[in-house]
Image 1 (tube, one colour):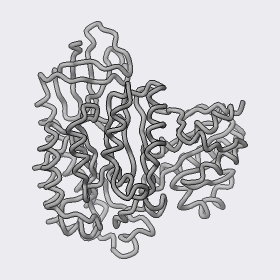
Image 2 (cartoon, rainbow, N blue to C red):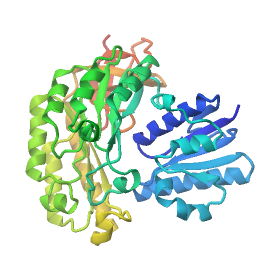
Image 3 (cartoon, rainbow, N blue to C red):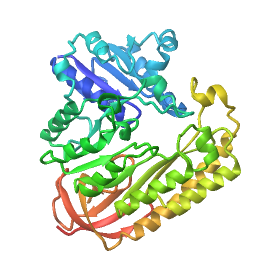
Image 4 (cartoon, rainbow, N blue to C red):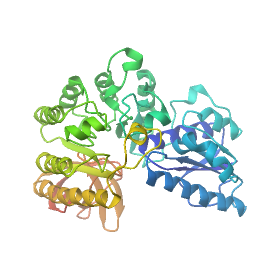
Length: 431
């Protein structure tokens, strides 16, 4: 039995791709391991990221390490798939002769057949889970139509393409049958789901149908583009108890000058109105956002406006990244990268210092509250869990004293918050 090690880099959308690939291979009796640092695998498949500079460098470094292992005879074959391969395969081939073949983001049949297996359409909704068994990601569409000025995703993954709803429900039901209790709904833009297939946005209907799946307890929504956010999604989030009071909605900036330069297709006023609408309809909702600083033409006034936005909005979760020029994008071809790197880094530091204070204030208000949490793992004498306000891998965690009780991973418990730090909460089990 050939053993294949799939190494996944980049975002959770890549995680889903790797899990679908693994299902195709295991159906043909291959043994698949994920992200293993062991070298006894016959074949290594690296699913790469090519979105921003740091991610591309991580992908290159990982390929080079695997290439060295192949030169040493510790692996037999090496394949590269995913975003980096999609964009740069022609440039990489002569530089990396150790790689047996390169495949793009839509050529899963190609890599399966190159590995000597047969790609089967009937297995397209099947997954081998690489995450902890109690949660998984559900990718509802591929690609993006928005063409933001800085973003290479449409160039890599193409235009928006929704997965048919029946296929998604079948995939979700199969995941729940394997023990998944929490689903993270993901896409490049989840709110655009269904337009290409059904002629209208269908995310609300999809969420309602997911809520009907027995034994699925939490549904969490990520990557919701703010422009033309569907009111019916807000309504279903407010109505359905299975949908977490949590929303990942990347605003990127708030200055109208920057939003226009970024081609974000919404204004500051519209962004603020959406936040107000969400918080009114769903009290206690946790909002997560990502911001981009140092985009071409970002002035001190633009940045001051962004700082005030963070200060007054008080996001529960926030990430911030420096602009990096991506070839082929609007900003790379039409604009000059005129904000020095040291200024970008300084602006990131300013925002994150502010966010630390906001996070501590938000967490301190939780002390004394009771929450329902899911247990992810045990570390030493403590259990690590999350509330509905926190997504795995990207958000804060709850550090839980069991008080002599044995807690089970993937099970839900009620806890009381006893203490708070800027990015952690402490709790004791109540029941």
